[in-house]
Length: 271
Image (cartoon, rainbow, N blue to C red; front, side):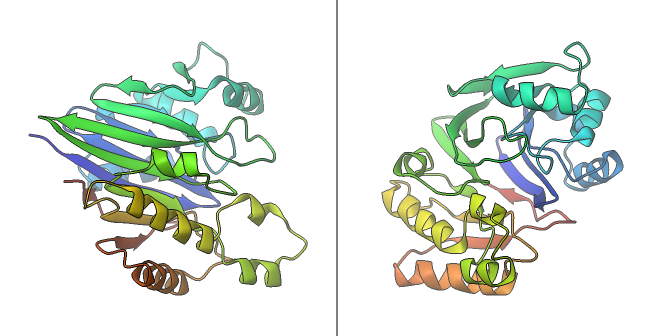
């Protein structure tokens, strides 16, 4: 049986975790803001056995992406943590991690393989605190001549043309829609951390560029709107603005879905 499935288990400024899996393997991209019992329940609900998870792949070192619970979950199930060397150096002291306690795999900017999944990292633009070296990822699954791609782009202050090209032909994309600029400016004019995240307008522009640059006619069939700020965004308004924006550009066939702070999304099978 061949399949590629995606479920965003958590997405917010307090925690992020996305599950991507096939019949042979599975990965979590980030694993924070979710406890051991919670993730066990979520994985059971989506029929993904923890023993099937071959890696926790870390985007960067902020606490809503990697935290103490990340190591508890990795330790409980013996899951290797794939993390850039610079990011690991930042967080291992913070969490008092000793090298022999966990299986740490240092990825670079080059693609790497986890069973039947090819992980292609690309740089993002994010700073502050224990960030380390931040990345987005494109995950590729090939089977019987067909290729299916899932992209994850969060925690970045901007989207460059090279980042857009990395995400061409992704049938599924998890993209940051952190804040509405006017709302953030009005509510938190002196707090500049929101500028380190992608705003609604920039996310919309990226979606349009990715869709128009893709050869695959069903690119961006599934779009998860992620890392939504409770204070600086309004989910209903966000959905409306993104859907109206892509419609104005004659972009069709995108199923827009919200992600959540305290619950998982539906599972999407990428065909």
